[in-house]
Length: 89
Image (tube, rainbow, N blue to C red; front, side, top):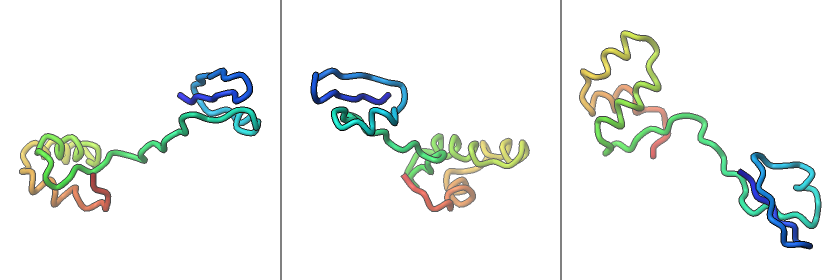
């Protein structure tokens, strides 16, 4: 949700998405700039519990055989296999 405030009247309007017209008008100010949405799942910290690593690994599997093997892996094996994508929480 995006909120704008009319500086002349004090009115506040809530809209489901940013509006270009309000962005260009001098008397309207955006109150809550949109935050970027993460591009994909965020890799858990190395110290995260195994359950977090299992959930993350399920987002990265390539086929059903690989997914079936996830439950049998230890946390350290999950980290070794799925933890090297360069993004950490």
